[in-house]
Length: 261
Image (cartoon, rainbow, N blue to C red; front, top):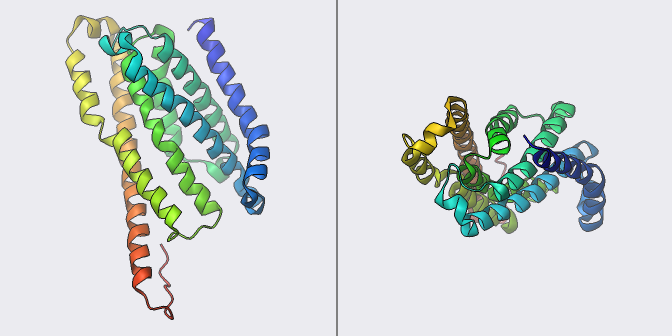
C-alpha cells in the first residue's frame, strides 16, 4: 500500500474520531433539543450513529458518481483505473477502523458481533483494492450498500427520542428503510454475481492470483449472508410496526393497546 492510500485511511480515521468526540455532541445538542434528554449512556451510540450517517452519505453518493461517470472502471471491472475507487475505499477503511476501535472500547453498550464480522470481512477485501488497485468496479458496487444506512440510523434516533412506533414519521422511515435496504443490498445480488461469473476464467481473473480471488469471493458471500440476516430483521420489525399501527387504529377510543413488541 502506497503512502497516498495510507494518508487517506489515516485522515479518514482521524476525521471520524473528531466528528464522534467533538462535533457530534455539540451539533446534536444545538440542532436537536431532545439529545439533552437522552440518557447519558446512550450518547455514545447516538454520536456513533451520526458519524455512521455522515460516512454513508459521503461514500454512497461518491459511489453513484463513479458508477455513472467513471467509464474506465465500468468497462474493465477487474483492472480499470482505480484512483477514485481507492479514494472512496480509503475513506471507508478509515471509518471501519474507527468503528472497530469504538466497538472495542464500548463493547458493553454498543458491541455487536455482526458488525465486527462485517467490518473485518470488508477490510480484508478492501485491503486488496488499496494495495493492488484491483477489482475497482466490484469494490464500488459493494459500497452502494451504504445508501441504506441513514434510514437505519434514523430509526434508532426516533426510538432514542421516544417517538411512538405508530408515529407517521417512524412508519414512513421504516418503510423507506426496508425498500432502500432491499434495493441496495439484496436486489442487486443477482446482477453482482452475474458480473462476477462473467469474469471467471478470463485472463483478467487469472491475473488476480488465488489470494485475491479467495478474498473477493469469500468476503462477498460473507457480506451477503449478513445482509440477508439484517434484511430479515428489518422486515420483521417493519411488519410489527405496520400491523401494530393498523391494530391501534381499529381499537375504540376507550380501549388501550397493551401489546408490547
